[in-house]
Image (cartoon, rainbow, N blue to C red):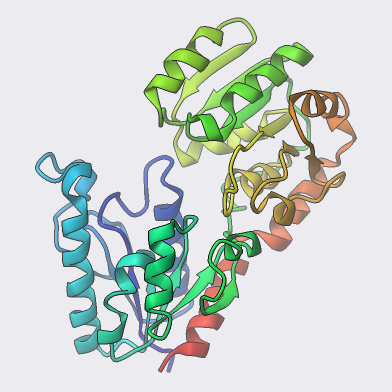
Length: 343
């Protein structure tokens, strides 16, 4: 008998998401993958979640879509959902709970008749670190990169599991395209301005896709530089990433912060498109310098590598995605660790 698994998600966004929201995409992929492997799974998420699992909710749809809740009040509903999840999972007979709301579940884990493993989607803040350390005897953690662990030493990490991407939907594009791609939220620390500067330096078209996370930054730094070689195509759906990334010559990733796992990196590799990136956060764990792209410091160095990107074998990029970043690998890793710690 495979153990009953409870999965606690955020109530804020739909599962799976229509567009960006990488955390909700991973929630959905893990949940559906475990169900496909034959595990009994209950998902605690908003009522509009699309899942094969048993679904338990506290709102009919995601808080972000409810005018009376929204971003201002969603935390209250996440507390409600967490409280309901632990009570229901106890009654249902769950043997383990996988939390995607690590800071909230840290305060509830002691009330479960089962262990709680928490997946860290974001870099822990100072307050997060205090919560994690205060509850380290009640909740264990799964990091999504080794770089992420450096932010809070002394926490009970039990595994590092890299995110997976759907290599069935992200098709291999053997021929390099004629433009550079940037995919990500439009904010200063994501490196949009730097990507534009690279494109202008090498006189190549740049296509930018992603939601506007900082309207002021977009208005002052990005919008005045649009036109000519630089085009902003807006936020794209997950189903559009295959064409957007696959038809590019290279993906630019001039990240300005220690991102714990840049999902766009393996997504690009799955399409066969190499990546030129700044080596911050988990980038050095994901990319192989000279094999699946280039690791560089600064705009000038990135521009120089654009001219050499055709030397990167797109077939090797695809093989790397299939070997190290497939959904099957990710789901099987979670199945093993959850089974190991199930009570």
